[in-house]
Length: 282
Image: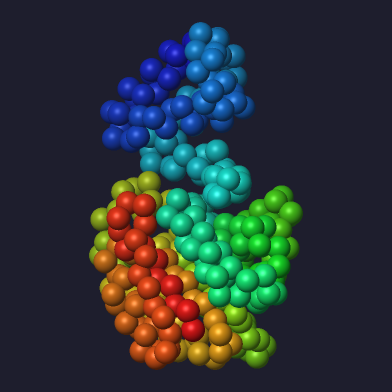
């Protein structure tokens, strides 16, 4: 089978399964160890039997609903490649916008001053590792309730050469227990309402960890908990940055404004025009 024939078969197969038919390209790049340019330049190249079998298996797995990223084991975030598996949420482009917003506000508010930053909800480590690499002056720590997620993030930190301190714990509790004060807290917490989660595609609902997705009946449980814990760890001058679900902006903004009366709180829309981030400058 030639490359173009393999892609044509995969496209047809995935379309019948109700999946993204373009996923075949990503999976064939993975199997052949090349990129899209390399693939397009070699459309008439014959696949080896080993490549054919591996590609067929990968396409079949995606047809069953397994995300492409869990098949290839990697996802790109902020220009870097992160290892992922079913213990961590697959990093999204919207979260890149959150990281950019944090970096811009740190520069504006604190300049190059050394800062204590905490990312709550480690996952793959995409947020904490990117902050540490993009702004070497930051002392970055991160917390996750799942040791399995921390193991993935530690692997990414080592692979990418990022210095991040890892805590196993629940939300801000490790910092509260240590009496530690923070300049910046950033989090992409679980924010999908339970009922909405039930209606998600099988690719997400049946494979990505529910603990990283569902935020209670209305999706706001973790933000409510933050309002109790944040005042115990933040310095007088601080930044809080949350990723949120579309439509949650006003509710989360109001929580922050009530908790920090003098803060400047801003809802920021993502590239798709959805309210996706809330920033508080205290």
